Length: 354
Image 1 (tube, rainbow, N blue to C red):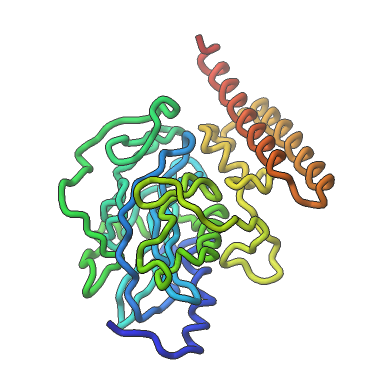
Image 2 (cartoon, rainbow, N blue to C red; image 1 turned 90 degrees about the horizontal axis):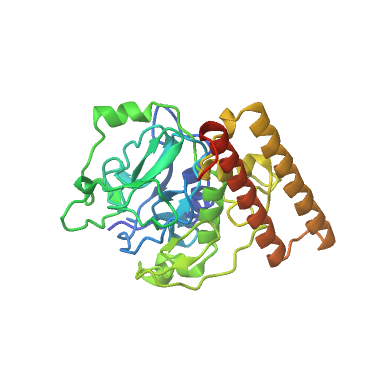
């Protein structure tokens, strides 16, 4: 196996590494290739998937990213998609021209080529079998994803996507790894309009890069935290048991943001509440804000402004930072507002629930 020895070049690559996998817009003409590493990524950990935290959230599998101290594990996590109708194509490492290159993941109407890497939970190397969109609602295939059906009812069972074969834990495509190549259909999917990682996904990788136990050099390829319920949420080890981890730093600049840029914070860790980020929450609760009637939009806006005012008041009262109980209360009100709008939408379309 080749190793990287040029320290200065390695430092430059490491500084650039975190930004490229999190590009805001994936190219419609080619895979987003950014970093060049001469050491293969470790094998993929085998782990239990945590249950989906709420309707509309979608699973993004864990992967090995590159940082100043080498590869580190970014836990698999449930996230809100940026809009209705899009699916996540995971990023992957490919060995090309004597180096391992990272191909950034992206959101799009179809799942494209991700190197044939078997990430599990519906991402078996080709396509995605863990769920599908039915209009504005995402339905989960409980044959391959972990969903509490007493809470989430938009489910189905399709066991044809389950393969009774030995799991291939190889984490890269190319010589010595997986030999898959994109099909004409996958190449066509790659030319569709794509959207890069969301703010929450950027935050998630940034959090992982701060966890010393996530680096392969420290964990031997067996990270302590392999999966999470949501960004900044509960951590789990390989056996599905709770795992400890470093405290999240909501003020840390997400990877890829240039110096001087305002810090962007995701909704999932309840540190900010603005209409742009909360759009993800509304979509996750089955509300397509872009198609609301004028009355629905006005109600949503009034509720949102009320919550935003509360957040500002809480921050002023606490020197610019919210206490844990205040964050919990804001989260509760966000969810309550979304559920109320959803009920009103249903009543207007179908009459009151009985």
